[in-house]
Length: 300
Image 1 (cartoon, rainbow, N blue to C red):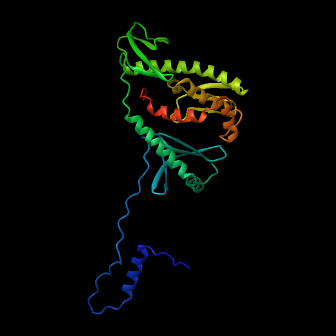
Image 2: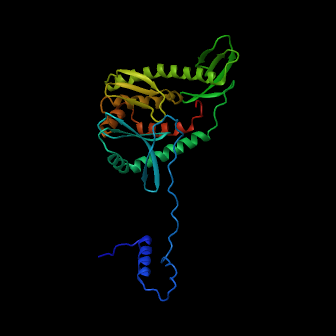
Image 3: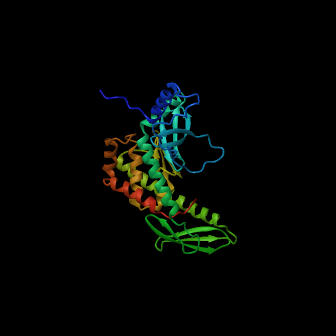
């Protein structure tokens, strides 16, 4: 039978009680008892950093996970289970109103390995993104489009316009005198989104026919952490920034989201559906993760 472990605090209390029980040898009070040993000071546990939040954001809750303190945003909803979402702002937990705070903390601890790994990956990607130099918005700038670079040509014009020469891979941007940089960037962003909407519709129709499914609608997304999503009702959202990547990577995301119309999960049956129209989905997943870290910073 093993003896119970006694920590340093218990030893110190024991020593104090022992010396206090002794009769003093003289009238003068004895010196204060000394602890058997002095434990080293405990350093403060690190708090996992998150991005700055707006003043009107809801207050964060705090939980200790191993050697870390984790701050997270808690939202209540009508959903039936607890959901976890990780983006550049950190962890967001969505829980039913009937679930207690203690139950939410228990659920977080049950998934703490996954949560901490994802937060670590997100932090590394954010650090890599911040280290990349931003694009200089001048004539001749190189912009990513469909897996390669296109050249931005800025020309003075009485009215703003944006025309793409696919053969020369030149994006000609006519700007009126006095146009600011943020207006120039917004005009290019609008062009990117228009190209994304056109291209995504084509690829969705192609892969929907291959999978034998029908989707209800398609919309563009600007999400910071997800390339696509699909609802039970067949509403698909695709991140417009996918147009930075080569067509095979766009096709992978399209096939992935359409396959959810057959399997609303990530089970082996789901991946079998993806693989039936896109066999190298594992390679595409790895390439998409890698390419996303290599993109230059275009828009804040």
